[in-house]
Image (cartoon, rainbow over all chains, first blue to last red):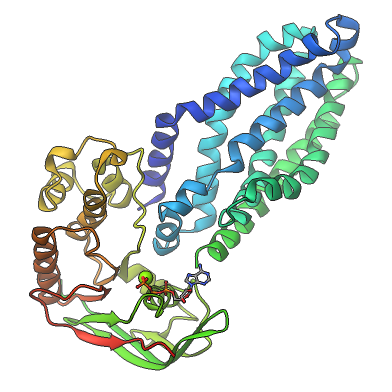
Length: 220
Length: 205
Ligand SMILES: Nc1ncnc2c1ncn2[C@@H]1O[C@H](COP(=O)(O)OP(=O)(O)OP(=O)(O)O)[C@@H](O)[C@H]1O
Ligand SMILES: [Mg+2]
């Protein structure tokens, strides 16, 4: 096993399990359509709320996608093979999260312009929404990976994982929606986006290591 | 290239919860040797393998590989071993060929196909592993043994689910490995058909 063959195999497995990715995307679309249908279809309500709605839907679909991130690897013994391979488990985790991120976020970003129209999000803020998603979601995935690894050996780990992870998602959501609100008020967004990027970078530095430690603890 | 293996386990104590798995266990695995870890279900055979790989803490005692304490430097041991556990890491959404490509990226397509022939999986090379039988899945993992040049094989129950011919083929391959200076540490509840092994007994305390 090496890093390239690992990434290829991960990517291939994700392509074979398209249904899971599709479910996360479908979930995203559903949550977003529920707001105009269920709360208020007027642009006076939707336009200011659009950023929050998009980000909550994103956070929920990311949670769905990462919740079982290592479940199959745990069950089929792949985690043992990662540890026995002599490769850095942190890098393997990073590659796995990268594959998952691409698989979920690319279709989500492609679907976003249409959904944004439904929420009356002005075109001028769409770019900020996209930017906040690109900069903020890596943190969501990486933090989620820690939770997934911590709970992988538990039979009913899903709820525990939500309780562990959701509080850590809050700062990301706050700064992301803050950036979008600022964009709608024609204010500068670079500060909030920089903080989002910083959070993703910190997650990038810490989360793979912590995930690797949890994986090692779960294999015994 | 002559392979060389020298694994020394000295007065090892292993614990799981409150249970002692082994006390004062001393044995060695050197080039050309087949070591069979014996013991009833739950005696701690798999745990011993995991302790060697560093996934279980050892209570006391030393494990040395090539003269180095593995609790300090495990890289040499990790670089020299090939471990197949109870669940050998076969991805069911991938085909046998893709699984082998994941674990043996240096091997050519021809070598991969040959390895699959050795374990009688030639016709199944491109079928998702989910659609294989238990024994066939085990064979996918075992095919790695025909592609590797690692000197130390750690095989946890490699014969489970294998048919008679499969056991014979694997034993023959283990024999060639031993003759080329490799070493094998395995656990099995079956009697070995053609091989003779040094036995390490894990008696339940
Ligand atoms: N994940 C685990 N957590 C806690 N205890 C465990 C775990 N796995 C095994 N044990 C305990 O450790 C002991 C040894 O288990 P181990 O798997 O090493 O046995 P074994 O000799 O390999 O058995 P078998 O022949 O069934 O494969 C058992 O008593 C078992 O209850
Ligand atoms: Mg066992």
